[in-house]
Length: 104
Image (tube, rainbow, N blue to C red; front, top):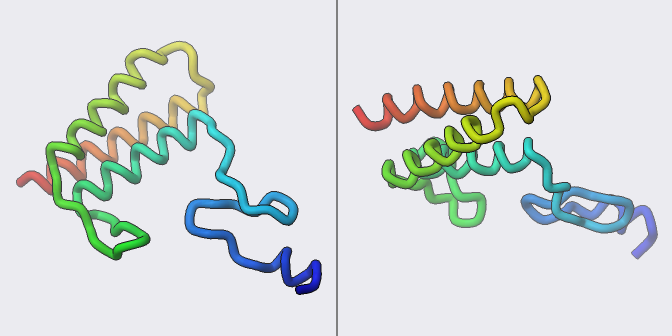
């Protein structure tokens, strides 16, 4: 395998290319929020598990994840950058609307 072929090889789901290697993305506040967002969306049946193709259906877990994000927002008030605060606010608002729709 040539060096170009190694560089062009696709990384597994959830990994990113860093040089010639596939690595997990850097852990940041944004990746934490987006991970919890994906979890809530999965539990509401909005997205599928990439490995199984199955959608979740557990509104109690979705609500728990939304509550976790709300706790993060409350406990980090004044300690986030403007962009982080805006992201968290938008994600929470979107998830709460989707939850209301899913639960009715």
